[in-house]
Image (cartoon, rainbow, N blue to C red; front, side):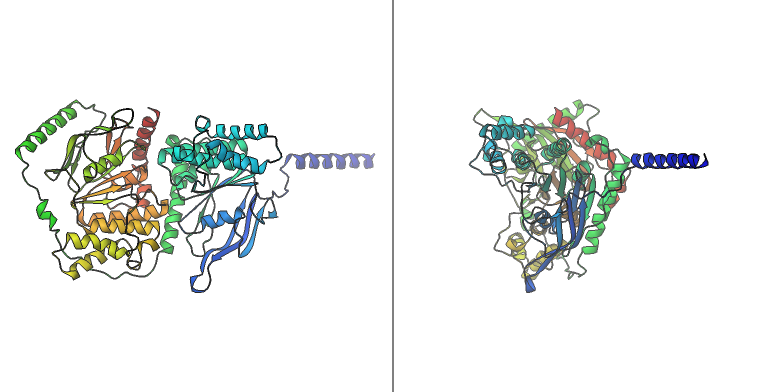
Amino acid sequence: MAITAAAAIASDSVMETVMRETTLPLAFPVVPALELRGVSKHFGDGAARVDVLQNVDLSIRPGEFVAIVGFSGSGKTTLVSMLAGLITPDAGEVFKDGKPIAGPGPDRGVVFQSYSLMPWLSVSENIALAVDATYAEWPAAKRKAHTARYVQMVGLTPAKDKRPAQLSGGMRQRVSVARALAANPDVLLLDEPLSALDALTRAKLQDEIVRIWSEEKKTVLLITNDVDEALMMADRIIPLDPGPRATLGPSFEVDLPRPRDRRAVNLDERYKTLRRSVTQYLLDAASRHAASTTAKVIQLPVLRPRVAEETKRVDLPWFLRMRHSARVAAMEDVERQAPASVAPANSGTGERFVEFTRLGKVYPTPAGPQKVVDGFDAKISKGEFISIIGHSGCGKSTVLSMIAGLTDISEGGIILDGREIASAGPDRGIVFQAPSLVPWLTAYDNVALGVNQVFAHATPAERRDTTEYYLGRVGLSGSMHKRASELSNGMRQRVGIARAFALSPKLLLLDEPFGMLDSLTRWDLQEVLMEVWARNRITAIMVTHDVDEAILLADRVIMMTNGPNARVGRIMDVPLPRPRTRRALLAHPRYYELRAELIAFLEACDHA
């Protein structure tokens, strides 16, 4: 009996143990979908050798969405190319599902920043290339239906017969995504696929990719330079420290609930904390990587452009005075009738330096005249920094082009320092999205071209010191004698900024000057711009589609409604103390409030 009781007790104990163990998660290791072990890679030999990656370890779980955020030139594309099997590491191993990657294959779909579409093929035909190569054994009807499914998945059915030249940048990138997915890969590798797109198109494609990922249950590795993009899309963010010999930093788990709404997440404390932590890590990494050499200090000569005498403030001719007075009266009438909820367009303080009065631009089209800008009204004080923000196609650049004198004014007018603008002139410095340098000249010579013309009355030493001073201020002391063709995009844009400031313009015009750069280079150049601008407080107008850039740089933000017939929708004061830094901005209690106001306006325009 005792034996029986003992056996029963033992049996119950075993059963409880078995039941308890079967209800707990099994401790079997999960084989990573992608893995790098001690990977290093270099290019070139001897003095030309560049060590890109060093001892990189990475493990991504099946079905996980991971974002790697890094600096330009840090090796992000090299890392993706190794996972895609396009290049091999010098040291270490690369695995997919526990097996070494020996070359490219349809089990890994890759979408690069450049679209790489066949220009003579339609949308459907470009996608069918991947389908036919992967499923050659399928009947033609089945391949056609499979192609149509992925065309429909990315919302391109109405454009399925169009060629790439007939598509927008966002639509072309949708074709690239659909082509990668149509091969039914286990893993999707996205190498900065959205960085060349405007903010609105970028946001829509982010949502589209996340939707497809959630439905298709793919493993996704996203390479990006945009912290917000990573936060909106990924389960985990991993920074890639700057090269050479770049390595991966710590993982940041993104514990934000899905789906993620941009307006709602902006007020989420977890989002704010995580955003601050990732940004702080990247800024600290950039600081650690910064060159320790000190540039030679140049004393800036005190020079006045000779053209300043020709463009100084003078009385307008009687007919322009009457025209200007009528515009001012009309503007004041508009302001009196403005709704109380909309900030008046002349909310700047101090002397009126730039005045836009019922500015309009009409372009001829095959369907008849189209008014792009309609009744743009604003007044800007001397020394103000103004940002103009709005969706692509709303006429921001058209307004800037009219004040630059590069585009004729159809209606209304612009007064700069008491004179009506009728043509281009050196009193306005311009920095475009592409810096427009002479490629066979050095950085120094590109800046000196303008300096020698505007300061022709100065001595050669004064012109030299002016050129070197501003190149030094933008961090190019050590590269000023390199040809423009040898410089990176960020360095070329620095030359453009130096050139604009070196001419001592009355008005600085910036047309999305950092739009083609990665986010981290953009942060650096924003700091450079603020530092150089603070020295002489040139009145500045900058066109941007970046909410954070608009708040960081500006005293006021002009929000434009969607085109056609775009106009000033609202003007927001930015009451944040100067000097500003990105670190201080993220910690300021009003920053997310201002950000929410801009996001709400842009979303309202998008839905209109």
